[in-house]
Amino acid sequence: MKKVWLILFVLLLAWLSLFVGVHDVSVSGLMQGDELQWLLLVKTRVPRTISLILAGGMLSVCGKIMQHLMQNKFVSAGTIGMMDSARLGILLVMLLFPNSSTLLRAGVAFIFAYIGVLFFLSLSRILPKGDPMILPLTGVMFGNIIGAVASFFAYQFQLVQNLSSWLQGNFSTVMEGNYELIYVTVPVFIILYLLAYQMTVAGLGEELSTSLGMNYQLLQFIVFALVALGSSSVLIMVGNIPFLGVVVPNLVSLFYGDHLKNTMSITVIFGSVFMLICDILSRVLIAPYEIPVSVVVGMIGGGLFLFLLVRRRKG
Image 1: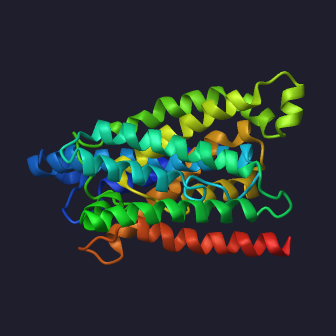
Image 2 (image 1 turned 45 degrees about the horizontal axis):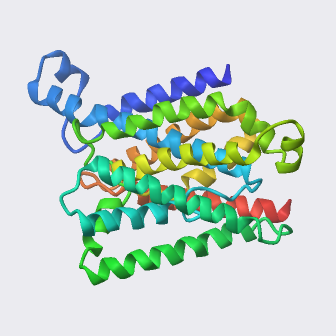
């Protein structure tokens, strides 16, 4: 029953998202057949709302899966260098193929994101296991190194502004005809959900899952490839969204527990709710101007992240 209420809340926020913005779109105007309002609704508001729901759900469930498989509550695509690796790949495409298609950029971003996460998985095997903060801190440093390399080349070839503006989390540029790649997240989630039982077992550890007859490393390679694909498609379409993959899975764990299979769908819903709320706030806080949603997510998510750190220390 709680899940039903959450779904209804998502639908309510999605409805509100359709009618919030600089330009007036109202139910009465749509019923009267206002062509401009219908154009805005179909071309911008509906694509934007769909993108918010899919991006929030995808990033949240990717964070949940990574935290479960790596047995660490503070791991996400943003804290293991995956997004920085994808960013480096996008920069190389911009340098070598300035007029490349979005599909090519997405493909290269996925390849670099996957290489980055595989490298970090190898690195994680030699790290000390005592303190759970070692893994995310190492991931942040690893990501910063890759990010520094990307920034060096961006400055060298005067692409800093292009890269920064293009990858800043912002849904204001989402329009019909240039956002459809984000639908890749739908089959990715379906496949991940079908693998939920295997991932739940794998989260018990390599030794135990292998003793139960599971090919642990193969499952890791497949799952992290799906995670890289889903995360890079969101990055290409709407930019980088900080903290979401860490905060939402931890909030879900507080209320619903840590069982991956039982909480995957709830994590998706929570992520969509969080993203919709932040985007609506980004449109109304300084209206008629709009704040990039990554700024709002960063402020709220950063505060929640500090809360989770303090709670862990007290626990």
